[in-house]
Length: 208
Image 1 (cartoon, rainbow, N blue to C red):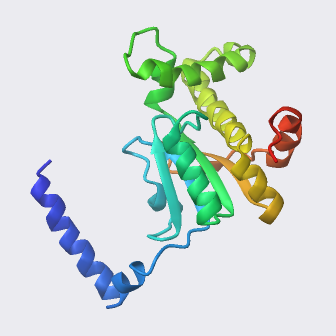
Image 2 (cartoon, rainbow, N blue to C red):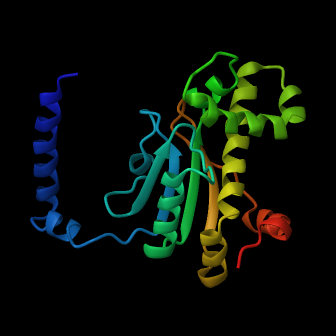
């Protein structure tokens, strides 16, 4: 990659945006008011706004390896709290993707150094659902299902947070679990039962 080309691309992008309206960047500079928080994977093949057909200012984005929502990760927790409490988003999405390198790496026995504690959270997802996963003989289908179950468990972690619980009570905020199929480009709604999960965990995770 020629880094200089990035700046040439930027010039072309600016010209394209100004062609849609000379005040494009003036409006952009006035602030943001997104209604959606997207938590996705850092994988270079999965671009948040593009796959949803959205543009600048429409979605607040956080990305990390394997789209994890870990309670002691100050980065993701800060993003969630800012998006929910300050930006007042009404929709929070966890979006995984098939052929996720992080999910596959978590199932390997190799020592991956600093990645070990991060990927251990995915191994925990496998442990919780091991009966279902071990019954799947096809390895690729097993990994695909683990991707889906990982999204589901990260949604559960989201629903455990005080910010999400309070926003649900105050303005009916919703949490969604999606998977992006890199082989077809299709965005798949896993139809996470947000209210069912909330009801199920409230005895232990209820936060005033």
